[in-house]
Length: 85
Image (cartoon, rainbow, N blue to C red; front, side):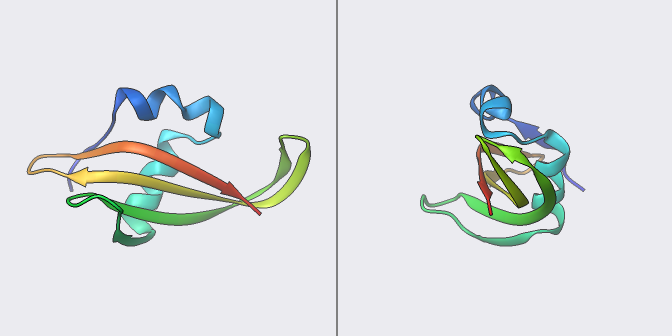
């Protein structure tokens, strides 16, 4: 199993977009994968129970969507998007 490394860009957005490294890893390892917009990149989606407030509204579900590149020896996470519903 390849290790997963968050890029500096992805790490900078962890608090602002409200995701953890563990959620990113779970999304990549067990979520639904698909091709991303740019060639050579992939994305994965995984929903997590949330049931808390985010930006003034309570949401039941948080979806974590990492964008990543699978290299020979590791998976590099370029950025991560989060969605609340």
